[in-house]
Image 1 (cartoon, one colour):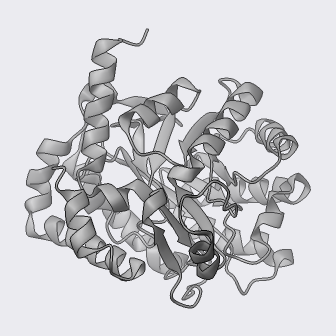
Image 2 (cartoon, one colour):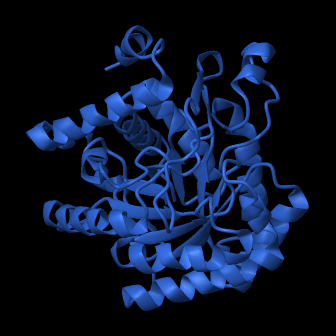
Length: 360
């Protein structure tokens, strides 16, 4: 299974990153359609001992796929067959939009990192909602006991003014909440102009309250609501978001999104600068994301679910985040470098770790 890094180097490393992503994703979906994915799932299914209770749900594994890989809900079943305990879809916006101009996705192979300025390219909430409903029903049939969880990440349509952002988020919440196991408000992408201004607590408070109410009303049940924050927030701002989340009785916080920082990279500075703006993800985020997680845990204790993401590559990285206070952990960028058996390897690594040191 470790032949993939060599395969990546030969088949994908020279190719436009977005095109390579599309081809890889199509391959995963093709395996599912052919029935091969069902066979594969028997080998990659997480051990029952990895089941994790969070958000009022049972996750097959604490490790899942972060938003960004499946932006429009086309491959939820296929990705679940690779061993992910949950798949977070999105970011989805109220209106369909093409995203930013290409090229907009770039690899920094030396850093095991990616820079993206995709710009929330997606079909819009109304088109994605039926896919979520279909995938949820299919997973329930295939896993009558404990099925993979579907998270839905929503953001602001680029052409919508900041003053109208709340109503735009509500369009997505009302359409998508009925088929979502949990909902995430993304106010931390650097690729939609002005979006990160919504992380200000005075703006964030009414937005989160409105989205939560609309989601629950639309779904006819409580839909767990989380907010996703940037690693570039100051420590004081992190503390303010934590206090707000507690005050609003949110279900959790996801930490963290991509960073606008370019510090500590191995890649040539001139090359990096030439790639332009965008959010950096991957291994360079490891320490900052872990620092943010620890600060949040100190602030919220056990009152909120914390989902850690950023620089996660190995089972040890996942365990470090669980030990630091996360209930769930997500990855994405390493998936591009490690290939389709990545989640399975992480689950097996977690299982070995727990057998060596049983958690009390």
